[in-house]
Image (tube, rainbow, N blue to C red; front, side):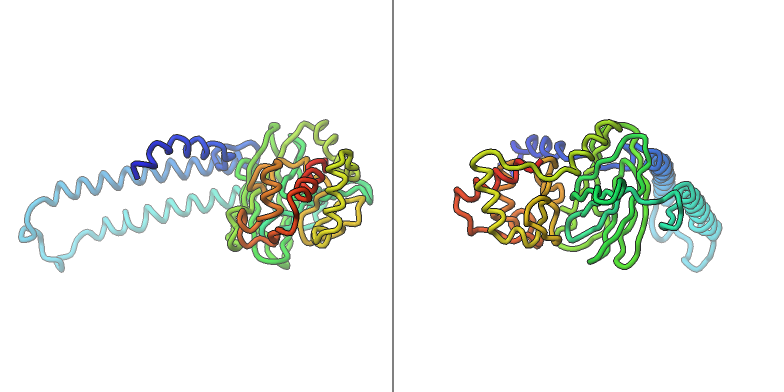
Length: 336
């Protein structure tokens, strides 16, 4: 234990690198209303707790003495304390919170596709353990497919359709909205809106298996112009490899089992099982936002994914030589 104490500040610094996920840090209209209710419930809880501790202290002081001084257990009395403190007050508090919760739900109704106001802009499909993202707006053939990182324009409500084909997941971006479940065989909808540019971390909020904790989301809110430019870039085919390493890496990718699972537009790779890699290098993280998108982590993910995310569908690919791995990662790093 003493050996770990000097390292404690380093652990605290590392913990601070994680994006904050809190219902109290709201950056959208829905999250702001949820934060108001969260603050009310927190303050109410603290007030009730303080009253209870005062009553416990009062009862302890009043009841000092020996057991022989107490009245017999069957003498009766105290029913008013039970009726008021044990039933009436808790019932009133829970009823108040229930009514406030219903009113909050009514302010953000979720309608099906038949409702003209909820034509989805984005379709999100939850998988074990990553997020498939489809941008549906635009003319036919102009749809965009990406993974785990969701871009939205600020001050514009984005209607999102949520689906799952394996197990139950839950879509939650605390800074923008509450939790909405993804249920196999059932379609749900949510509308999110960011009030200012920034990165907003999210999480699958329903336990969905071994790597549930690493099924993360990232919402990138941009100005309308930046969002339009990003969408235009995503609609383009993948960039052609220019360097000798990247050209060789493309052949490594196409000759390996990678093409059976992944898709890269403009190449023979047409797999639909795993994330689309067409613009992989433009994303900030890999492995469902579990690790930074850099050369070191890409090499580790390609060769030993099971060490980084045990149970993931991505297998360990240890058949590559050092040169092949270097070329392959060079190719992946230029897919912008």
